[in-house]
Image (tube, rainbow, N blue to C red):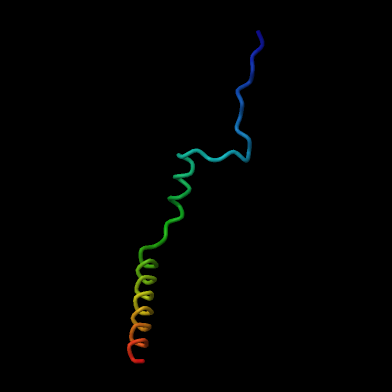
Length: 55
């Protein structure tokens, strides 16, 4: 009987869950950035509200 070599993954194969999760950990967004973005959005909406109320 002839032995068949185990099939290897092609280079373009999708990553497994374990490999994908480790890649996501490296791409964290600092909490300060999110807080500043929310604060600026709140100020912008408040500014629009004041401008619309004056008319």
